[in-house]
Image 1 (cartoon, one colour):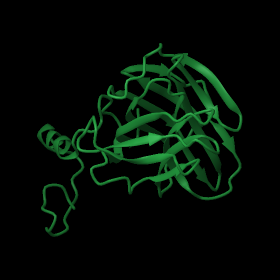
Image 2 (cartoon, helix red, strand yellow; image 1 turned 90 degrees about the vertical axis):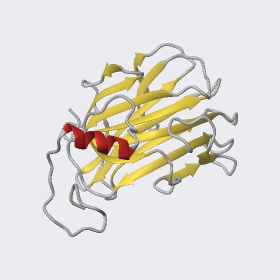
Image 3 (cartoon, helix red, strand yellow; image 1 turned 120 degrees about the vertical axis):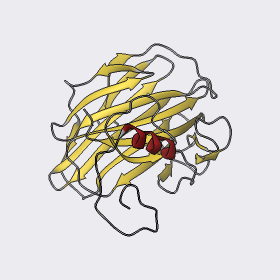
Image 4 (cartoon, one colour; image 1 turned 60 degrees about the horizontal axis):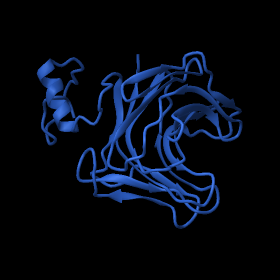
Length: 242
């Protein structure tokens, strides 16, 4: 509906420039899910008040978990609890698809809490168009503090270390990834407000096989049958990132 009209109002001209008071009202209505990096234009946000219906969930075995949790959340009443499966490739993954083509810089930001000894937290952005596919994948290893880029197909390459932080399932930490679909290069990763430059690192590319537009994903991953828990809250996806 046009800005400033009720849900049941008539359609009218849409304003695109608002005063600061209007933006403040918008932030309140959205629940201010963006925890620190409030740049770019929001195209998707989720604090899981409406469940996990906006996500495609995949687990490697039947005992994997991707589901609502009502414990310590960033934005009550719900967050998502993820437990990697004990079989197959030992992961639990959630994906959100955006059903339109976009060319430019995009970002995903989310808060995560993880337990002691969790192995890997993976997240990323990918696209699949008639011109080809791009994969911008990040892996974080809490035990070492290492940040890696790559895909499961070609392996992982370290590009930064954020320091070792002990696992605490009740402590929330925030990641943000920004990538550029036009140039095919990463832009930056931000962890706890510190930016790590990735502008010299290219995405993994592949030939086109299907038109799926673009999507984001978050994953809890292990190398064996040991199951670990992590929680995710306040996911925000942006375009037109500077």
